[in-house]
Image 1: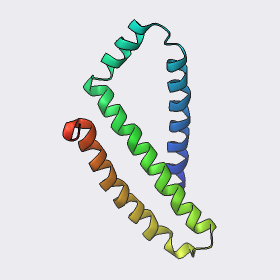
Image 2: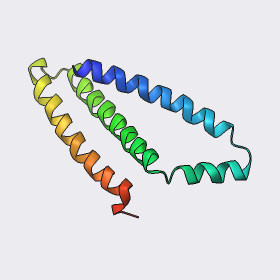
Image 3: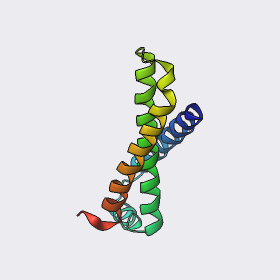
Image 4: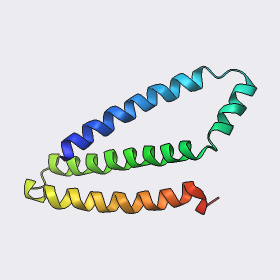
Length: 105
């Protein structure tokens, strides 16, 4: 299951990066930039940003778990590390969500 999550988040982040760079490279006019900034105030965009943070957290913590295993940590620790990464990621995402929704300015 962890390998599937890692691959899905990796593909999703790659697609996001290409889309992000495409959009940024095509904004030349200050009015276009301003309308894009106003779009970011939309609640659906904020939910998407929280989802993006969730993808980054899941991918990075699972990558850290894989690094430990590649470095020689016994494979019997795979499941405990997965659930530890899951819980840690959930806590980080809760803090990030609170910040994005408006808890920290």
